[in-house]
Image (cartoon, rainbow, N blue to C red; front, side):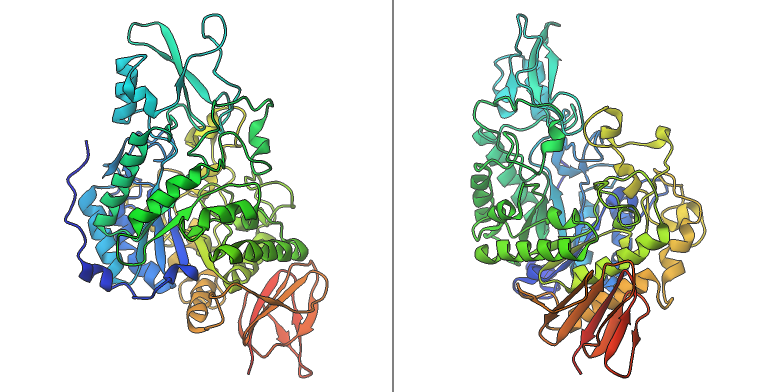
Length: 560
């Protein structure tokens, strides 16, 4: 089923990437959602050749690496997070030769490539699962997933009370080859995504082989989807409550953040360390505390873990400072860098989250105050990029894109949208294809429209409309990333020195660099800490050494 692999990337190709040890400790990594980035063949769906054609844009933006969401062979029940073949590219995105060309071109542009890996579950069209169904009860293939007999007199009830993150029970009953109702299988997400049984050695063997396949192709690392979910508690015990999705992030669950998952990653780290080039693992690990997140990035496990606590923090100086301190304090003992992120493919874009009142969560259905949201988003970005560690950007945030909150029901494709309870199911709003030009079919995304409709006026937010325009959000990002790369006190390290500041204002020093952020609704007077390097809004500096910092504004200073 797998496509023929291109030859492994030669050492010389990797050598064209800037040779800097531990590059990932202060890297800026840009997430590309391939189906919404650029369409090369006019079918309305983004693809790998489209990504490849836009790599110079990402190089010029100033990022260090590109993380690609899944492009593997998949029925697309969950936008590619249901993988049928981990060693093949889905035809909608291209083929393995396209992946090889993308990796090589990225390296020639001094960009690293991180690919998504989905080890918690496969597609129900994966060869293992199809054979497990066809062979019936007792099949050895069923042991590689979680098949169980049901409860009740005739096995008509699920094996336990676990609920799917997408809503409804986390179990689906199969019809056996003889046509009778049979066993149930576990799926923490959609029914088309059966969970692997990581207690079975064949699963571990297979994924170590998959790692080597893509490492031989030349990728620089892996983002691990649902990194906290691989290992389930012994016996799959009942949780004893309903609305379980509301408990996520508050406690260790029998199906999430089990301690046994760390054995998996220690074995993976051995594989990764066989390869040259300072390659990395990044965990998508939703845990109850940042301290438990730190367990994933101990020296013999993964390199980074997404900081979802920071993403979820309100636009409030006290809350932000507390989250920064907790993050740095948790990561310092394990020697891992902090990571900072404001948006991704699963949450409402931060330009829209900040446009709405606090407390609505990370999936929001209202546009809110667009001007306020953009002002806060720009300020939040400069704050994030000033913190020690690595930062993640999500495609289109450099354009200040809002979420598209008014998509018609008939065009939505998020599987959670169609399953009643569970996640809100409004992730499509942050996945609308991004605009490249003011005019033309799909604003330069491609010549054949776009798989999700783009709003009218999208062209005025495009790369073309903002390029070279002083004060535009795109130029702010370009300037910020350029300054970050030039200033030795930005990015690297694991500490900040907090400075005295008015209520609602954050101020910290890192060497000769100072960042001040006003999260309040009114202007604040702060000391002018030298020369203004960059500001997210207009700042007035007086002759007596003070500065008028507008509401929702961040300023970067450097000592003269």
